[in-house]
Image (cartoon, rainbow, N blue to C red; front, side, top):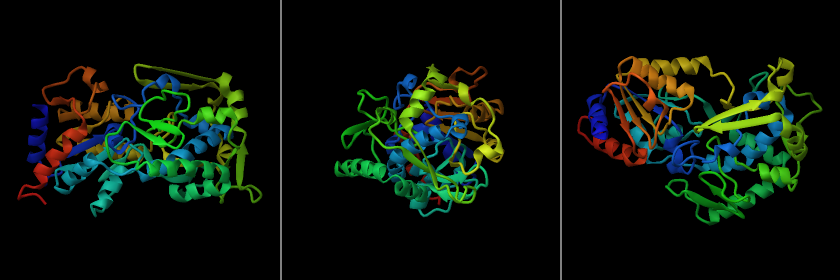
Length: 386
């Protein structure tokens, strides 16, 4: 009944752009990018430590760790293709049904879907709440480089890592790895990338934020130090990169890092990085244009996401457990404003337990790929839609 109601509401607002969308990682699982939680999540969060902003800016060693993991994972994120749910949303947006698509995802697949469809994406069409992996910025002077060029820079500075990574990419392609599909597992050279927690020590799970869990390999000392470039504008002329012995870093930091996870919520405490870094600390530091845990959200993005909800008659949540507060507050805002709210997500969400839910709240406990494409096709094929 809820799915039928969703279709009815979407049909009602054709050409009016009165339905806002909030997307989570669940929409990208059919593109073989796992989500943090739910049936297709990374699973055992007790063994997963997400780097925080404080750790990243406070330690060159942790920056090396992050960039090493990102370097290995980026080729697979960059090759990921939009799936039927992404295309369905953009088809509905082109039909004038949807207003803004607010996404928590950093994979850029909404933009890819629009470009593939020949659409020009306006600033309010897709609002990337947590940023995007496609860029890198200097934390001191804001110098910018796209992630593709950054990957080439990292390859030049780390030829042994590049050779190691290339072998795995070649193996994955040889096995006819498909970016679009519902496979829960795909092989990558001598290791296996799994949508979920690693089942064997040699397995390396791909993470939703685009990196790969290779900490076991880093600790083993089987790989050379990873060289991290600095901003060419801010860095001293004699400095082009910094290399860190990652094995030593793990030994030094092991006693100072505490990590707990319960109720499918990540909570990280980095006791050695509690201070606020000074401007001098950030000189030359390059960071991906994504929001790390513990980092403040761009107030312009927050305001744009509020406007998306406030200017709508209904909110459609797709593939999100709403565990992260920045997403939960948008859904709660719509509920408090008395708007019709549809949550299309397999599994429980944070909003399900909220007091004061009315008959305008509709939970659709299904995979988004089983619902959205059919609705979009039906609406877009109507004579009065574009």
